[in-house]
Amino acid sequence: MSGAKQQRELDLSEFPRGSVTEFTTLVCLACIFDIFTKQLGLAARTAFSEIKRHTPTVEELTSRQTMRPYFDSDEKSPHCPYCGSAKRWLARFDTYCIEGGRTTDAARRNFLKKLPTAADQFLVIEKKSDSRAVLFEWLDSMGVNLDLNDPSWLLEVTRMYLERRDPKTNWDEVFEGATAVRRSSRITEGWERDGTRLFLAPRFYGEAILIQYLVSRSHAHGGLTLEGRITLIELIRRLRYFGYLEHVGITERDPGEVIEKLIDHLAAKREWYRVDVDKKPAKKKAGKKPAQKAAKKSAKKKPSSARPEPDEISAEAVKLHYLIDRRDFLEKVQSVYASYAA
Ligand SMILES: [Zn+2]
Image (cartoon, rainbow, N blue to C red):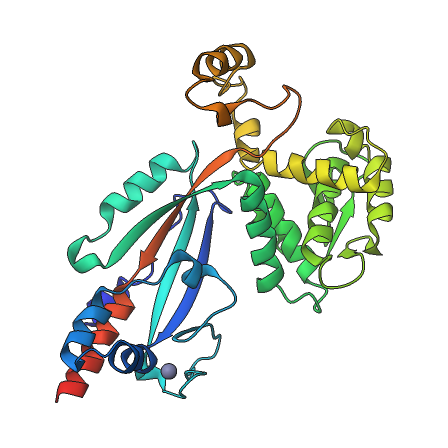
């Protein structure tokens, strides 16, 4: 039994950092048992065998609004918020959302191959999404997991952004002992350290404050950034001044349009690292000419595949692979049932 416990942690080190999001949801077995027997009218024994087969939906596992019998808790000895049950009635589902794509597909296949298949200890559910939704999920999960009242979140979010942008660099090392992040006026690429200060090239720095703005803007008027609390207009003014807008080709003047374009741009760079890693633009997926040809040909069959304007950045389709770890749940159901039957 202790052997099984030791194996518990999954090794996700083969995945580029920032490509896997983890979710933990607790389920109260007392509540779920209650639902199956009282609401669904099943006999106790039947209820247990049904519960064993039960897997929550991806929404239930990843949403922040939980409903009975599910809940979230950071406490060491949590209690069910619905019925007050103690720890031994509570089981944990760990869910890993792996972004599909060229940089993760091989790692994912290898990883899944190594998982035990017996008794549905693990389940994989695939969902279609797009790069814009993925970006907002990512921003959202940072907003939830970071304490925006603690000023150190600005460094933390900057590190997480850089990890996602450039997973080849060991950013933990770069940030080791850093107490401030500044915009460099010396370098145009990458970063450099000066004592406890980390200097970022203006482009990185601009993107970092844009991310900070997007993470914090819903919590207060304007957004909190390394530049202080700034409004959208102030953010755009700075990004223009840093040369960032010009760099990404944004010429719009209307703030609403600018921020939409900025978000499109961040979303399109979902796999930022791909751009940096490949020196040659390896097989542009859907090169413009063949794509238009194909669209014409298949227009009858799939009218929805009409391509957007060539220069328009639009959300790319992304496949999300949700890996659900049911091991703790299966064990707890077993032990609860054993004590119940005794
Ligand atoms: Zn409960």
